[in-house]
Length: 398
Length: 76
Image (cartoon, rainbow over all chains, first blue to last red; front, top):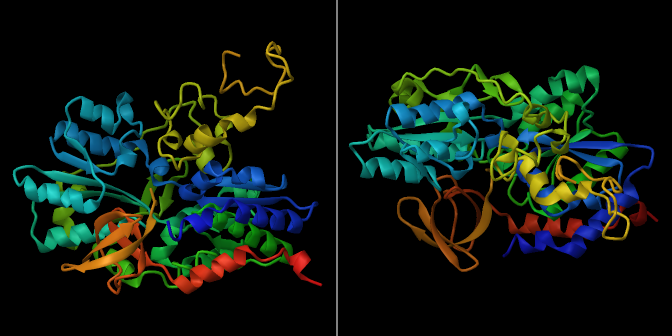
């Protein structure tokens, strides 16, 4: 496929890997955070971590909307469906996010709730028009990439006076999450999460442009390279970060220039600001309450805001005690550092949100990287247990 | 979640919609957010909406960038 195949070429990847190896300085450690789940997925799926020199380390960031969705928000959606009897429409990604009382949307559906998985926000509005006697709620999650389509359906619902449709808005904002990480104690004081640069979001940046990141480069002296989601894009982005660190520069560079401009998609931005306004605070799983980090529906569209329509009140719910999703989302821990990883928490039955979406750090590591933790055992089929470095989290019986 | 794929616009439809082709798979998408999309353009599709347009010259420039030599080798 054009604009995909050429960005996945193996020889090209090896060439860029050789460039990275030639340019890294042996006495420097390079710690880069890839903010987006899309990048986390690409790094795991294409084995990019194995192509990097040992002193280049990638830290997974919180840019997976499913992963940062707190339990309390999923609870609101489940209660709407189970108790208020609404037809709840949502993107497939949210279906298996664990919520309170061992429930998830898919388990609530099994209990008889009318929960529909939709491909597009427009499909939810269509369902409302086809079922005028039912209340239809669209459970909207996602970063800036996914927000404009939600804004369009709210605008269309208002224009066509579809009274039985509303949106439970959980849209969150990338720049405020990056600020939160840069301001966190782990990065600023403790130094437990060293960050030397960011791989900047790909599709989020199509909408918001490269300009919003300039603040991070200037204020925090961190280089940012906006990078596409294909493996060669990611490799090139890492090379560009290595070059900035070597030269002592901290600039915003755009590797994904084939679609990302400095200003972004203005039509989409205007639409989003017509329909949404900033929330004073929003709870993120892993990051806690983050000021001005999410959107809510403007009063002019109150009739289509499920929170107002059904008088919903958010209540925070703590995560499973042993789940390390919070620390993993902040870059403090890696998936394999969690006791639950690969034992009770797997993609088939996730305990934590990072195991749900295939962009989550745990799901990506489980699918593509968990065997990397196992060194080859000595020859012979009867090598004693413990002869190799066996990850006991994955093979508890060995 | 932010998954999006490039697809070629093959037909413009009324009501800000278009048919895109993705290796033979044809799909009806919204072009509300990329209103200047023309037949032959490649657009990025996310949840049934075109959200951006690919600039072919920039794409070629990025591919050329991949083939560059390491800075240390490039300098004589």
